[in-house]
Image 1 (cartoon, helix red, strand yellow):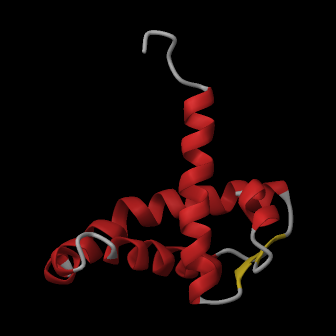
Image 2 (cartoon, rainbow, N blue to C red):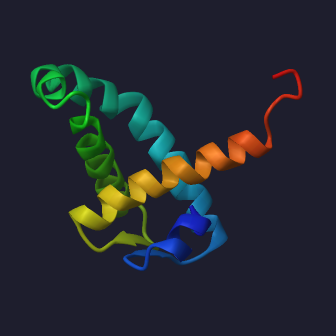
Length: 102
């Protein structure tokens, strides 16, 4: 979260504790609300070849910004790019922490 907020200027996180709370809230929202949204938007997701899932991710991030005090996202496009950058940063950290068996 913090790395992504440094990369993208429209994302504001007050402290490390806020970043941890945002991560926990995003995990809960992704576990509960995202599956419902994915099922409800299957036709448009198929029509856009899955790219609509990025819109769903942006909406989840904007919702987390409304829930957590000390975390704000300036708008939809900021949340959209935040989602993409967060995915890339997580992929890099997971790659660095990967198994030596690969």
